Length: 262
Image 1 (tube, one colour):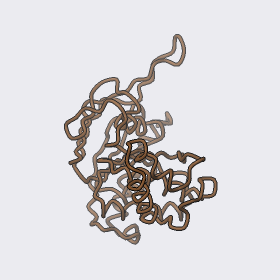
Image 2: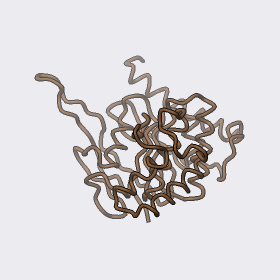
Image 3: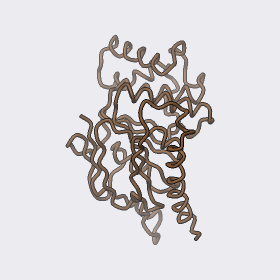
């Protein structure tokens, strides 16, 4: 089971200095995520997408509301939630294999077992032959493959990804999307994926959540009626184009609000 419930979650940050107003990042958000859902969260910059993800991860606390994973309240980070960040968060002094095995080591998994798991995931994300390389010897895409493998080796109930491909070039980004989708189709993890890229949101998701301009709220919850498994050529289909047009208009109107123009 890996059902996620976000109930009345909001976040207001204290004023940065005396006399300033607190910053309302999120208005109350309610969201139910079923087991094996692949949810992408789309919205203009500063709308609270990453804040919401960090609250689910237990890295930030909600001002109101609660997050439940399989009926248990989320109060802190835990191995049932695996987080992949936009920045490359690998340990530079560890090899690819040791980075992948890090979470298992922290949990006290025996060395032989964690090394076997790291080897398996290293191959499954396409890093065979780079097991003993260090992060500085890898491209950005390879570093993110390592970060994704590290999360999956820990076998979380839910994967949380915060614009993990945002810093990659277009070709590498497309390949990473296909890799992640292939892993999800096999592993059937529950996924929350934050992105600002509309095509990426549609290609990956079973549902796209559109956030409003700050303070963020859920503006739309759009089911993506495209069959899995998905091939990259689906991006040229009429159904894909129709969804892209709809979501582009949703996001554009919020970006206008965020920019303070009419």
